[in-house]
Structures are given as structure tokens and as C-alpha cells.
Image 1 (cartoon, helix red, strand yellow):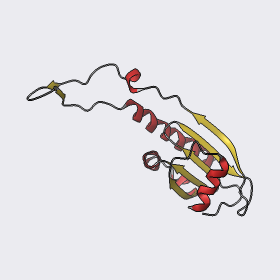
Image 2 (cartoon, helix red, strand yellow):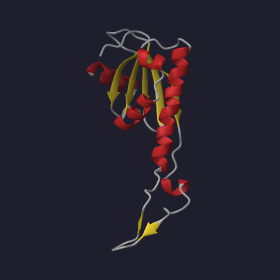
Image 3 (tube, one colour):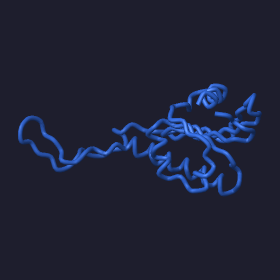
Image 4 (cartoon, helix red, strand yellow):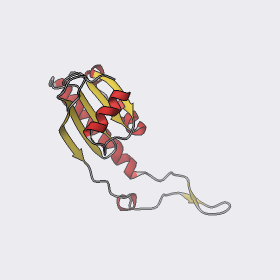
Length: 146
């Protein structure tokens, strides 16, 4: 994938966001960080307060008729929605013309549910991979290889 000048790259997962812009050209991309956010995720045991309700035991161990809530996953999904809100504000204010999204498959799926039409119209590529811990040069190489 070719990265024209001023193309923005959103690299996100359930807890970290990197927003980069290509200040270089198509031949020599130079990714600069324009926004970085990270949320602290506490373990499930700190977020849940009780065991599941309505349990029964017909044979074997006690089982609940309700699934336990995965609070960590809920927090990651909420962060993905917050990322789409940031992208929406940038698109509506005219700061973003072209956008590449890089996120793990689960996060990318959650983000797709919440894309605003202005964001969808600016997306030139999506890559379903984890890349929040990569340096900008490695991210540029990943996009170029896609």
C-alpha cells in the first residue's frame, strides 16, 4: 500500500492508540506521532464484585446459568469506541483526508461497528494486526507490505 504525504495512520488495540501522519512522501515515508493515548486496564478480579447468580447442580460441579461478564473486554471495546470518536472529530474538522487503520481483528471489528460515514469515506486501508508496540519505521514497512 502506498502512503501519500499527509496520510494518517491509526494504530490501536484495546488499550493503546497511536495516531501518526506521513510527513514524508510515497517513496520515503516519515511517520510522526501526532497523538498517543493509553488506558490502564485493571484485572477482572478488581472489576467484578460478585460471583454469577442463579446456579444449579444436577451432576458434578455447580454451574451458573449466566456467563461471567468479561469486564476487561468491555473496557477494551469502550476504548475502541473512543478511538472512533477521535477519528470522527478529526474527519469532521477536515484534519484527515486519507486514513489507514491498523488494529487486531477483534478491535478492528468493534471499531467498524462505530465508524462515522465521514471516517468510512476517508479510509484507504485496514490491516488486522497488532502493531501498537512497533516503532514508526516498522509500521511504515507493514503498511508498505500490505
